[in-house]
Image (cartoon, rainbow, N blue to C red):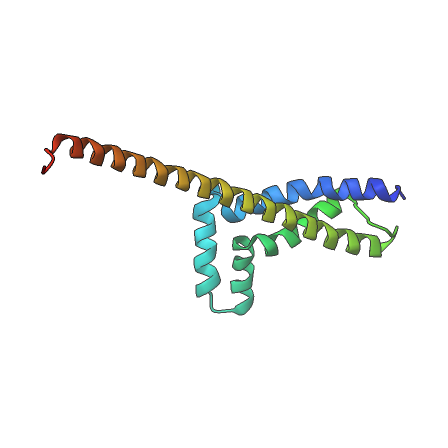
Length: 143
C-alpha cells in the first residue's frame, strides 16, 4: 500500500477529472439539450426511480458520486485500507474533494460575473454623466 501522502496526492488529482466531467455535464452549454431533456423527464416520469435516474444528470453533487465510483474502479484507488474499506473511504473522500473543487469553481465564476457586471454598470454611469455634462454645457445659464 502506498504511503499516506501519495494516497492524498492521488485523491486530489483524481478529484480534478471527476469535478470537470460532473460540472461540464450538469452546467455547461455543450450538454444543454440532453440536460433539459433529463430535467423534463425527472419531473414528468411516472415512476419514482425513473425520475431519480434522470435527475442524476442535472445535479453535480449526485452525478459526482457515480463518476467518483467509476474513477475509483478505473484507478483502483484505495485510501487508508488495503481492502474494500479503502475503496469505500477513497470513494467518499473523492466525492467530497471533487465537490469542493466545483464549489470553488462556481464561486470563482460568480465573482468574475459580478465584476463584469459592476464594470458594465460603471461604464453606463460614465456614459450617462458625459451625456448629461455635454447637454448641460449647451444650455445657457439662467443668470
